[in-house]
Amino acid sequence: MITLKNQYLTVLVNEFGAELTSVRAEDGSEYVWQADPTYWKRHAPVLFPIVGRLKDNQYSYQGNTYEMTQHGFARDNQFQIEDHQETSVTLLLTENAETLTKYPFKFQLRVRFELKDHELGVRFSVKNSSDKSMLFSLGAHPGFNVPFAGEGGFNDYFIRVAPKKAYQRIPLKPPYSDPNDLQELDFTKPLALNHDLFDSDALVLDLKGQQTTLMLANTHNDHGIALSLKDAPYVGVWSPYPKQAPFICIEPWWGLADTVDADGKLEDKFAINRLFGEQQFDAGYQISFF
Image: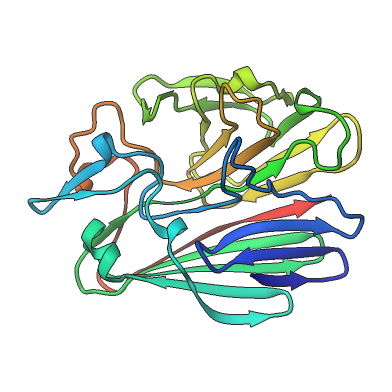
């Protein structure tokens, strides 16, 4: 386990999956979900090379069929430490014999965590290590305790989004996306949390590339988080239903689950990203803790 620390926060990151596992304030408040398997056994997995689920857990590419389970394989692989300082770490995953049976591309996936004052920056870098085109999706899945510091319950929390406006929601017909049936979510005012919001899986917002901040806060104390995105086209908000789980995930996504009418071909996949030979894709987000 890797430790990052400053005068305000102590952060733990697991080399397995490059997964953020803890953010603890000086007063002892733990912000990150602690992976109780009763509800959800993960903290904040990295989603690569797909986000969400493939139809029948498979896809075809250049005449071959490949099997891959939900959210891809990065979360279940050991990353290597490239650089570790007191307040930062960079972790690296490259293709291996097992990944090539699921995903026929050579790649370098870097995840960098950098702590500065009350903020944790998370940066992703995906590099195509071959001279052939590479197709991929990428996402983050951080879970946050609700409540943070033991006061109040799930229904005492709310999410506020800036800019304040109505956002297009891409509905899920679980577990697939349905971008042909767009809906609206009104974020001109805070969204009060309740478990029934997630009876059709995650709330997926189409950000259209706009810089966006989602704040998770409550009516009982001053603790909260603000997650800011500059370049993510989508963000998901999720808590497992019908479980009465004491956490919420705010998930920056550069990709989506297969659509309900997907043909299974990777090159036709909705919201897929393409890198030409030796190109690099950079993305990320920041979380402020208060």
